[in-house]
Length: 615
Image (tube, rainbow, N blue to C red):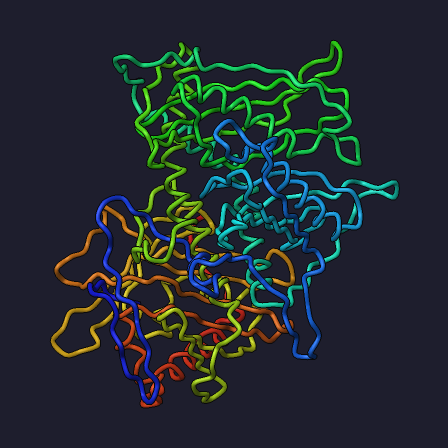
């Protein structure tokens, strides 16, 4: 736990080891937190989080991921637009082809694109530059798998390389004559692979609930957005409407005679660009594609009808909605895909230009206009919670229903990343309780590990109810439920005693996110992080503390034996609680977790009293 403090870095000498602890002040304005997955995933600064070079195993064997596929393409004029920049549609085709080959290498059978997560394009690519695309399967489920894609650009004259985008696509193995394909499991061999493997389960969870959550958010938010505003000189949305038809020919199809998912995305990007151009009378730059799902297949001989319109224009960006439908002959239209794309227009200094406002068409246009406002907020939450750099991280983030999904994802992913680190150092051990430390990127993390003779699921239920933590942890003086968001996410207020005489105690507003295992290769998880609630501001009686990343990982080793690991990413205020333990001058950790062991064993057969949503 950490109290809010300002400054840059403090060097604290603990025993014979020196740890630098980052002190963070909350930036002004609306800067939501970073994503922890970005924080600890890169070994070298802002390097590629998926980069995993040839790895030497302990056996001396040179290891390379068996599902990895690489593609390098030099950008020719035929691949570029009139500005000399690589068409994003062409890039999407290359990305889809590379990812499909990786999926099929793992599955050993034909695969089709099921969905693609949000893509944010950081840079454009010019003619003569080289595009390097790498794809590998992060995790396989029953018949679907997640493929991670990273795209970088290389300048052959300067030897410079930079990241363009990262993406995650879901592919499904097609049924064979024998029936449904049962995919073999991915065996992670390196630390990076273990990290991506672990977080893939969390991304899949978000993917499966994404459409329903977005629908609920839009229906609740649009009611509060009010009427569309009238702007002088606004451009009619009807002027931006585009409809185009494409005939699916053999070159557009894969070896299964289905239309390439990347080809469909390229056609959709083309009509979206035309719609955006009609609003701004300039060449727009595609920045973001929201997560989308393919609703059905398209085949050779289909006529693909593509429709696009600008839903709303903001000061420096516009949202374009695109729909793809297919038909054959006189057959009915089949919905293939819908997507929302965000464009900017850059000036000669490569800065976003102010855009004309939009005047929506009656009825459906007003709905799209309002929903675009809601999606923009969701997009900002997602961007700053999941994609920001470490230097942008405030310790806590305002919580509301619209960003719950992303905060919960961030919370659990941060804990999984910390747990996946392989360079933990054993600091001390006593009474079967082990204390580990990890100093990385000027941040000190610690882990406490013990075994209990209690079933894993029972330990999970007992530890996830923070209202009972005072029974074994003297630092939890009081804990109350503020919001029971759903069965997985609960917000608590926790009060802790003062560590020095005459001082004030600390209180914390914590989001606790619980996760049951996706399968037997996953642990139970209880992730904790601070959030900000307008209804519960800091008070004079307590110093408001903050938790950046903490929680429990609970592994079932047998029916009766469970391994429990507690993690904490130390921020300045946590040092008074742990410095003596790490320096070997105290054993309070061991007494605390001995009490935890006793608490779990005494309640191993009790019925856990859960929050209302768990009953």
